[in-house]
Image (tube, rainbow, N blue to C red):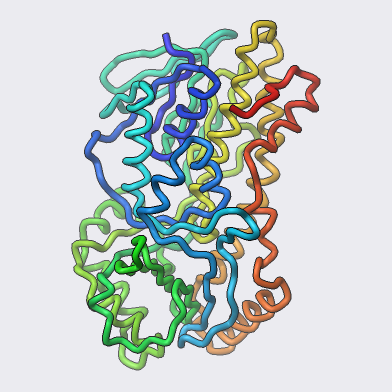
Length: 428
């Protein structure tokens, strides 16, 4: 029997497994999708996310497969620069920011998991957590198999079945969605856009991020954020296959007659091969008081616990931080002299460490999401631009984001130490 069963093989699950391995804790990953499944566009990994990837030995591998950058330009919808913000910084945070294909990161994690001998089972749909006792928890799969381990950790995403055992709830739609794609830079060589890339444009009908996504900058990705009504799971799945509707949603907001968006925005929308368009409805998970069950044998991390929309660029980072800090926390429960009655106290220390930070990130994300909404009246748009210009001017190049990007998962040591429990002295 493995010590930890991990439900979900996206980002958080494999990072947790690899981090547990460093503490000599065995685990197995169960993933609902097939091994060759590929989906999703690009993702931005901030310095705090890259710091976790570095801790498991994967930063150097992925950094050469994506676009490394430090400065992000904020502009109005007509391309006027409002200010610049350090999305990453070697000087400030020891890491840049990285724009990269999700599939590249997933594949790097999968190969690393395989390389170190961690079992990963595919097409295994978790249906429920059967129960827990003082020593273990049991999870059941759609094929009828039941697996028992010391711990069951749900990293199974926003529609998590593991979460239902701890806090039965359904995700809530934010009112925003993203449409993304990428275009070869050669298609844009005749466009005199005058924009510093990467750039985030805030206009009257939504926002439009333009970011190179390949190491050499020859692939230009974009991410349009627009307001939508909730379509439900089936409706969103239908939209994902309806490339014509996605293209029309872009046209209605960014390439309509009389549009004042920069020519590059129009060119990106019009030159995108429709079959490369992907969509992303922004959901969040209702606030949870705890991320662990009463006996502390079932735990949720990442989107399973606190799905965060991408408007703050911190969704993946929070999942990776969860995984790294949880591995360190669980390592304490395997000390020879650890008494199991203290397990809830140990997990509570981890939650006490994570929750205030998560609340701060959620607040940051919500504010960013509001800025990406449409501003139907020109006075609303002018006010939005003034707020952005003022905030960037007053906060300086770091934008006051040191609290977010400088974080290290090792900071969890302090909270565990405050419990009076014996602590792991080295971060292996």
